[in-house]
Length: 64
Image (cartoon, rainbow, N blue to C red):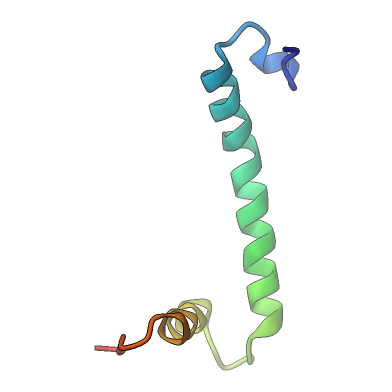
């Protein structure tokens, strides 16, 4: 199997995967945050939006 990045050349497959995840996860999280901010009301913070999403998806959960 050929490494996806030159920096990972010669690493064990699990280390190559970890190295790639370290590169990709921050980009994905940045995109998710951008999308969340674009979908919320201006007066609603991202943590407030996340709390509402959690409450919506977890029946019986409360803010307390």
